[in-house]
Length: 223
Image 1: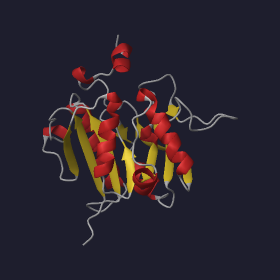
Image 2: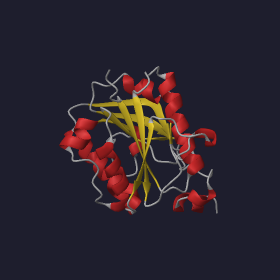
Image 3: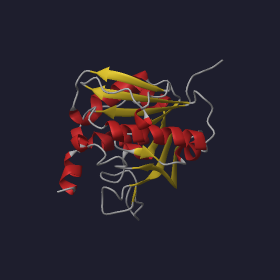
Image 4: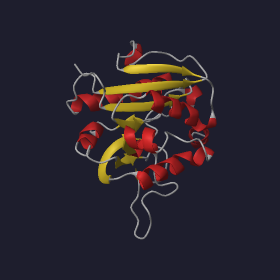
């Protein structure tokens, strides 16, 4: 019996957001159930950056068996080394990038399952909790969809062959701008790209659940 996952969800974590991470795990479980995915079709890889983080799931219960935890050497650099390590360990044919303070939308796997003949899928995410706009990406006349400040890894479903084989994984160059630079590289090498206005993610879904886990932007927004 083939137990290879169809989807791998990649989640770097500093270990300071256990409640937000639990929300992210729960969002993956709910999206998989809504899409009717078979047991074993989804795995979630949580990589703790330089710490041994908790192995709990929603409501403090033990994490479900499809969540795999990795205690990684401290890499910092906006989670780039952790993301690269997790991509190397992923087994799924398709990859989703969900940080530990974000969440999948309930219909995410339904949306992506309809486009698995494409190497790169770009969906809409709710960014209203973080920015003075409702969604990303924004399609503007005369401007590229994939441009700085308009795209986030949470928007994407990518084939592992594209990312891990042809693009060499997740490159750390650019620091904070590495998201844009990697996404642009994937787009240039993808043989097919599907864009959709369907909602696939919620940015900052878990922001504020863990006081010690606020990033600089979240802390500044709270005053």
